View 1 (cartoon, one colour):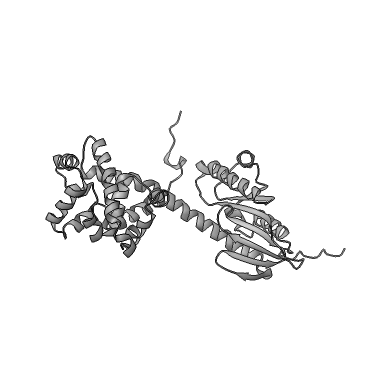
View 2 (cartoon, rainbow, N blue to C red):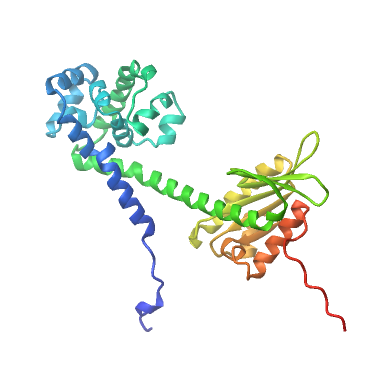
Length: 333
């Protein structure tokens, strides 16, 4: 069989990895090993040693020292966090906790400002010693569970925590960008009927003189409700999946199905899914049977395509407004 030539294969772009690289560079001076070392260089070593002895067991400190490392590489003490509150992120990453897991699923939410703004609010400063005692026990479990300790291992462990965080935040950005594109598209379609707008809503007066509201939020990404005198009537639920990776498209369509099922329980009865990546309509229907209409994002953004016209017309029907494009009158014969 002939071997494939270079022209047989698509060229893949490393955009995600380049984004990770620059974000990692920014973090290096903030809450990774370089940041710890530059902070320690400004501190009184005797005072630092006293706190390490107070907060960490002698056995754990001895084990760290046997590998030629100082205790603060693995253990947080108040002296260090007070000198540089950003370093709470250093220890969180080292111990393997995402921001969501550390700050929202336990009692540590009050310390988020240390890592995010480098500040310790007055009401939090008194609890930093208790935080460090907790973290010291976590650090000891880590130190005792590793067969070798090194700065390289610290760096690798922090990267293992950062990787999913970076990817998750990048996917969230992609999702926000796609939803903003849909917002702009909807706004253009209903422009002549808009009564008011905000960053996340559009209020439209329909042909019956009633108000309908487009809300751009989460679960669903876009919702259309009719504002009645006594309540709001759910009409349309739209899920937007902006990722361009075709290999993962059906997982994203499955996620849209979960959101649609939640919306169905909220009283919505029409469900659309907008996807950027190419997909098989038959397979998509299997993964999201609740979806009434699937649309490809790049196609509905192009006014020259049939998909755009279908999206426009169906949206106007759901909102109860005439299409923004007038039909040409038939020629007389």
